[in-house]
Length: 57
Image (tube, rainbow, N blue to C red; front, side, top):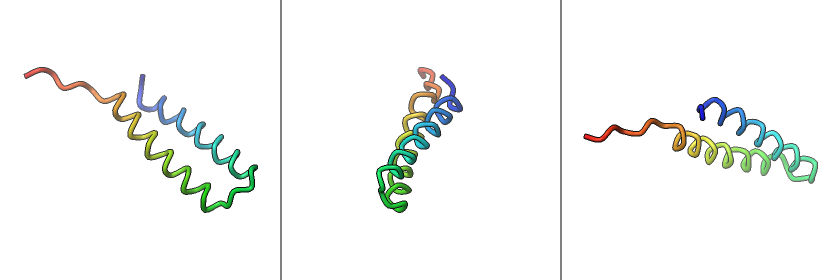
């Protein structure tokens, strides 16, 4: 899978989480922190899954 596809999925996920937290009445500061943590985890996962494997020496 491509890295861009992972980022698009991550953006959709973050939007849904943020929307749900706002509708639940959570303070905007906590919504921002939750989204930043999820973004970091998502980017790390996307990089790990899409990086090229090193060729054997």
